[in-house]
Image 1 (tube, rainbow, N blue to C red):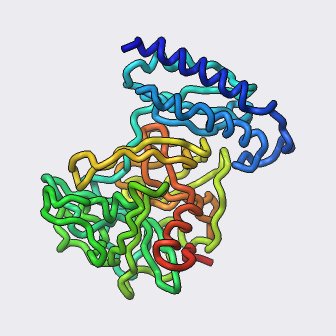
Image 2: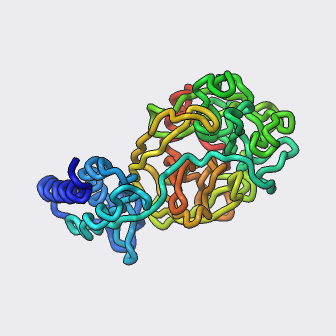
Image 3: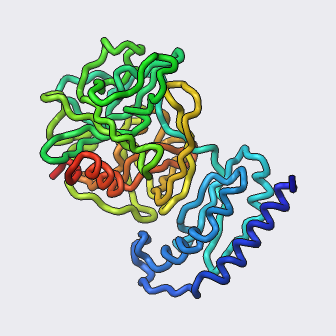
Length: 372
């Protein structure tokens, strides 16, 4: 086997040659103060570069993914996420050129991305049992999410509606990722109860929680590009206006992410937190278990994801999976993304539009956020 340094150098050189042939000369059409979203000319040019080289970069063991970010001057750049503890990390970082076709290239060291399901922790308001009808942004999960000596759970993130029926929105890996009989002898099935709080906050005993929803399996993973699941609301158990703890009610409309957009979320573990969008159009890989504390089920490579600054896991932490990310405004904020994974430096969200489109197709109608 060739040394990683040699392989990395050859791949980067190949990428440079490829983009020099395939990419047109950069042409910036947007005014300097335009929002850096995926329609911006500069962003689109870096996305074209990203498309050409990401596949080769991710063949290198320590490369975890790529995204479009912005440098200190506000110019779009290509971010390459590199495992800080990976084999050959230093060689890959050294091999990356500072610019390709006029676009900046930056390595960002991080730990591996993981689905942010939770295990037991100390109780706060987002983990406490509420008096019905409950608000969302709270602890919850599949009623029998216990196996291999552990119980698991996440966040009941928000409320959506399809054909006048209301559903609690969270992640696949919070509601329905138990896919083997394994450690508990069962698998997640449509009709199962979804509870508040989750087992992780009631000493792993469902008798201390309340049924607030009924699972509707949509099996988003491993085949789709979103990590989502829903539970049909049990009548009278969830506020029908979709209010989220410390955020309140939402707009029924959604917005697309843009670089440096101010966002917030309300989740089981870290409560109400704020951050900013640090990257767009991310390609990242996330490993999933086959049940709570179980064995490996599959690794999913996502594309087109939203990246959020998460220094020291201050924005998103274990147990916050399923939280809805919204714009950071005081009244009726618009949904931006569904949070599901991250590292100690970076959080990852599915664009909310992709989530609603997928769910509408599965549930036989148009999926919308419950809001004003």
